[in-house]
Image 1 (cartoon, rainbow, N blue to C red):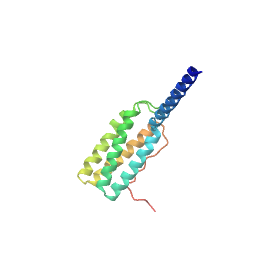
Image 2 (cartoon, rainbow, N blue to C red):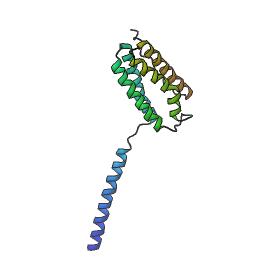
Image 3 (cartoon, helix red, strand yellow):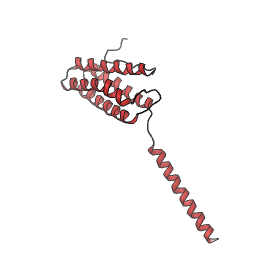
Length: 148
């Protein structure tokens, strides 16, 4: 009987620790899919356009760096996806990074017309990628004042 109780306690403790480990693994696997990550990019992009329209270089630079940092994570994370024909890294390097660099350079020089021009190129490149991959989302240019 003592052996049975010891064995039962041992297995209960083992079961408890294995459940704790599974819960920890599930909590650690809290990653977003590509669509959710792109929703984040939409927020960065929209707010960046608004700050460029308002002529706020500090906030625009902060948003640009956050967007670029997140895009780098997305590029490193999404090598394959059901709608991607190539790793996202290729689109980032070819279509997004040149425009991001131009926005960054223009903001450093407080050259808002060139920053807006580069932002519009970024917007067009995002939309062309969406069309290439049959994604029904349009990225809007928020550097223009709203027509009310």
